[in-house]
Length: 333
Image (cartoon, rainbow, N blue to C red; front, side, top):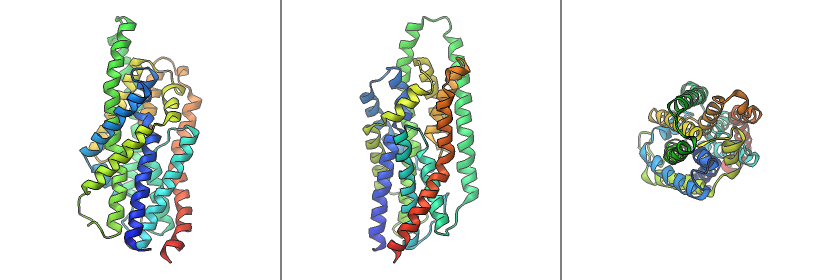
């Protein structure tokens, strides 16, 4: 199989990953708005798909981090097999957690897949870059989401403490529409760019793109389109987990969670840090729930989600390593 044909296959698989990312993470942007009936599911999905595209077109900083900051770009057919195995590992973990209804991180599944395949293929992993740009943000961003949403929720409750509850809820439903759009925009600035980075890495490894070249427009548009199509397809299992099973959201708590999560995602995207939108919105929902009382949060469900977070990188890495062992002899013979 020629390098060009293998590169085309990887681009198609990468867009497939982008699609699974869309339906796996669609609940991140709209679960809270749907659960409080601020938006109908179909309208929410259309809006999320649209703003995912807009967000994906804004910047490529996260894409450059994923494409060049995780592993060294190995050249030739061996390097392409590593990228392909990493993608398959990420897609497999996405499908497993989607089937279980667990909002795990597509971001960390992709990073884990690339790392596992690179280790199996004896290529260099940029551990310092992973610690600085992946591990630290992975730990810090949910903490900011939890703490920020907790404090923001307390502030909103204090400001509107004398308002009529029915009128306040009506107003916050409108606010949720805006915050859901912002959330979808933030999702586009983060998750669609990760696929852009993988495709750019593939083109660099195959010799079709220079290491210092920018990301081609067709890569940006196709990645944005794939994640938006996936988002429109919907992720109902995960949407139910985020919108109802962690904490029974109200319009004000949904608005608070979405607003804080959006701010975290947009802030990290500005610095090219690939954080998990899943981690951020899940922890934000937990934060607003904790303002009512600690027992209001279903910590058993939250615990299962955290376990999925912890397992994502090593699980995706293990699957990718196995896939590399299977594909490498077949595709490099």
